View (cartoon, rainbow, N blue to C red):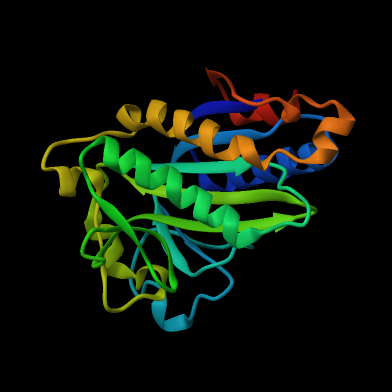
Length: 236
């Protein structure tokens, strides 16, 4: 079973601390696979491969260096950020996991009549012409359990991306569901579709070890969404 937590708006560093705590508990089989769904206060996060020239030159928005793959991006209001803390099958196939997350986000975009594609050599979800990214993906896998995840632009202020080189890509832009659909699509609008798609796509990733240990993570399907603080999730 996958547990979904709708956490509301959460400062980035607080959410990162809770990810790590929840990751440790998932590694120990103390909790089931869990997905945190939230919005952040405005922040730029720089992955391991971020170059100095990609960072903001003059911005009041903080920059946080993180331990995920990829380069620099923005998180904030109007963007749904998802952190799946899930155990992957052994042997771990990171690329296959990223493709699954792309499948989820592409399905959600399609449900709003926004056609999307993959672009060779670039992770994430792109408009049909391959010129604008609507969703970014950056993950980390440690001890077989995932951290970090995806960011789906719903109705965020796209001007925030002008201060950086998003994902280190100079020849393409950034967009949102609202921009592409021509009408407002909010984070609250997309959360149910994201939960359904994640439950369907991530369930096949259940591992033999889950079945042997008898954890609730071995069950297919999803647990009804909850609304609560991240502290309550990681600490229970």
